[in-house]
Amino acid sequence: MIALFVRVASNFGIKPKEAERFFKFMVVGTIGFVVDFGTLTLLKETTGLATVVANTISFTLAVISNFTLNRFWTYPDSRSKNIMSQLGQFAVVSIIGLVINNTILVLLEPVFDSLLGGFNTLAIPGYIPAKMIATIVVLFWNFFVNRFWTYGDVD
Image 1 (cartoon, rainbow, N blue to C red):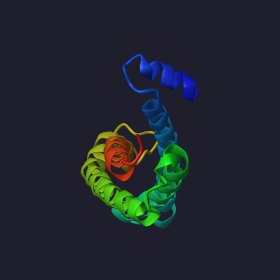
Image 2: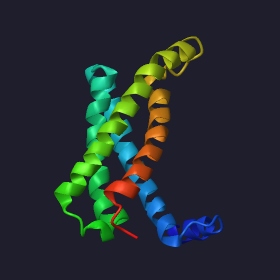
Image 3: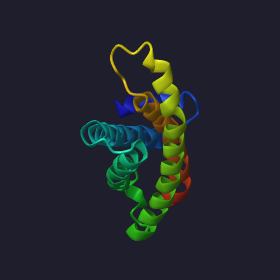
Image 4: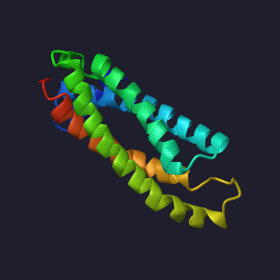
């Protein structure tokens, strides 16, 4: 699967190693999304926590998962960098990502609640599509800033 992705990406002038890293980053991100989205939904549906509080908890759990998987699988050659320094950089990027994520969620949740309210026979709460959009936006922020700052020591 990785080899196919790398081959297709190379047709667009992307270096094979960078394409492989992006593929792995997407796999890690997918795992992080499951942790984030699953925890958010669990907290919202079982505890009634405010969306921003539940999202902050779920996002934080995903960040821990993502840092660990990225350090040891996506960017194993970045371990020449001190783990605390790298974790600090990852945390800064993630905190900014959380602010972006929460802002999009707060702005879009009521819009989707309103849009889905009259047509929503499945009772999908507005935070779900809002979270999906927020996640896509933050994915690009996280990849590019982490790639060139947090994991900037790799070729």
